[in-house]
Length: 248
Image (cartoon, rainbow, N blue to C red; front, side, top):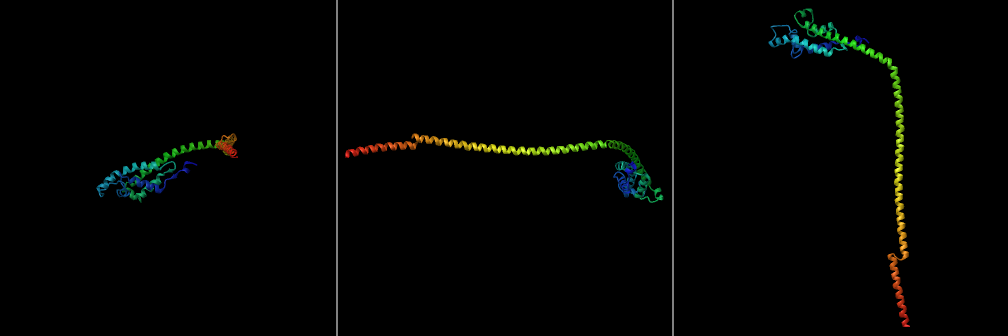
């Protein structure tokens, strides 16, 4: 598209907004009412002193403020047409006919405003045309490389798919490994517990075998008592037999 197709002419409402802001600056007219009352800085002895003071400064200050405002609004997308800007400005400031222009400075102020807006519009238009040319060259380059970019994109998509599938396999393998490691640890604990039980059984059996051996040898406390009792019994029996023999 050409620059004309890309840009939009500044609207009537936006022009009125710019004019209002320009004449309402605190260091100038101060308001639209004062600008209209003083006819954009037309000297009049009928005005109050403070109004005349504003009127003397308002015109030049409004022009300076419009330079700032227009530079912020007019750009590569918003253009201005001098005739339309001036006409809208005059109507907004109360100029209804040619006869009104002769008794007011508002027509000259509006011409100044329109010239400022037009200058910015022309400057931005030229800059926009250069920018558009650069963009068109860049677009041509991108068009020339589009198929190559598409092919690279397809390759990237294929690699991403492969990576995704590989990650799924890695995650599945990791889960299997983790589960098997857990099973191995459970088996190790079970084996350790079984060894502990077996050692306890062996230790108990050894103790019982030793006790049995001691019993057989009469060395356990019970065996020793039994042996001692048996010895006493034998002595008693012998004594009894001796007494019996004497009695007979």
